[in-house]
Image (cartoon, rainbow, N blue to C red; front, side):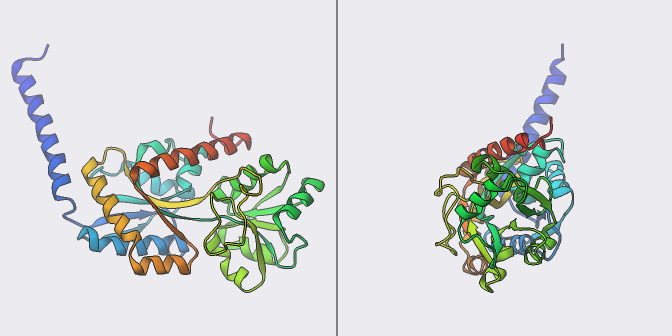
Length: 320
């Protein structure tokens, strides 16, 4: 049994910790914030992370410094974020990779070790073919794939990536069988144009230039709604195929981050998502700004994770 002196000491420590957390929340932020980015410098995801960081600075009153931590499909950044001090000074620029990396087992934890502060928006991940492909509609593509199992090659960014899982998701919903070709993000579009694959699943910003140049054609998007930039392109869902998997991007923090700090980050990034320069950048790069606060975003992550887990299980990719 603890002595009264020991009990008093423990209570004093607990009170000090409680006061410390309260002080952090009340004064936050008082120094620069690190935004961890799970991609290398120069890509669209990195550029967008830096843009939202810059926009958020004016509402947080402190610099938001982008730090690239690529590797392991995002696992390097997620591990660093999980292990960071939960004080709001290390935050993560997350994406659908937070679900694929965890389910495939690249890291020994799941998405629920984080609080998902705010979804900034999402990119559609359309199925794209060359402009001279024989399929003018998604249904023609589906019909051909049904008649020619294991013949249609679809390129993706890598095994277990969101652009790999989407065609796997499609296989069950459409009743077809594709050949999945992991090409890496940089080779994906050149491989399509060069005839190495019949189609690719790609984030919309990476294929827009080829579509606008008349070299590629979007058949359908696996999103809840049609993409504002391509309102004539149908969703798979409206065509009767229940395939919804979006490449979202947002802000996450370690789970133990104080609620008041999370709230300040949520409010700041909501304002940042409405910043005219950021909105213009996103429109130019076919990224749909669609803000969700922490309550809605956490529910959304759970819903998307359910889809990812089912697909990975069926493909034999989910960790046991």
